[in-house]
Image 1: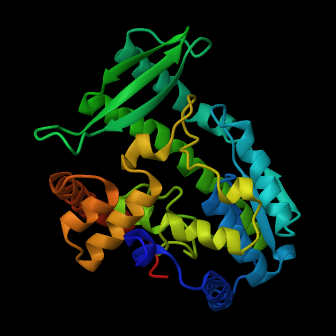
Image 2: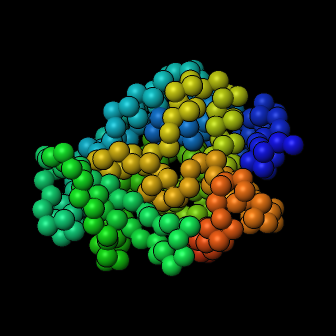
Length: 322
């Protein structure tokens, strides 16, 4: 009998699923009476799969990939985004820095103010930073919390974030995604193209996206796919292995940051299994055996996912059904 993850999550026929999504995107763009597609390309597997689907649906000559770096972005992101685009025959690749726009909006000044308040001192020439969500599901009475981490001078300083400081950081950093959306729509409207939202199912259901930012789009080709399924389709589409297998990052903070430590707390396969198993009504003890976790930990994970689903409703109100 296959492992529970494979049984609940794995796509039985990735090639057929990819063909279905290509046909669906072609139909959606036709219904919208648009001429092609624009993808904000991060070099990650989600945006790269959206590029691959768009290239097949519209023809690569009617697809534009746009990299939108700022001063905190990894140089690897734009490089992998261009590699993914080239592998799909997409030659229209643009790099549009959002740094000047963010400076004009006060993003980095406001960010520095919050970091100074949290750490007492913060020098962007000496320090990098990230935030982490921490929650030990196995310990009864453990409380979830957000922490800021300052990296530099050979050490790390960790501070638990007060609600007011966490909200300030989120509001400030969300500017990045909203400005990227503005730039993406600027390109799309000039060409009469559709903007493809690259949010997957985990991100949509758990509210792990920015409203009017990376959660925006005209078409939503990935919003019902779990992350493991995205990776399956990326491989079926022939994306380069270093793109299809690239670890998921936020690429938002100056210090390296995984999506697991930033938000989900579970790795990708475990998160996929939790979402699928909860929907299928699988017992907590069966899920726990698969993940090596206690039934109590699974219960706490279930409760967290449900709370996040409720909170995400206000974010997903503007997202399409397809």
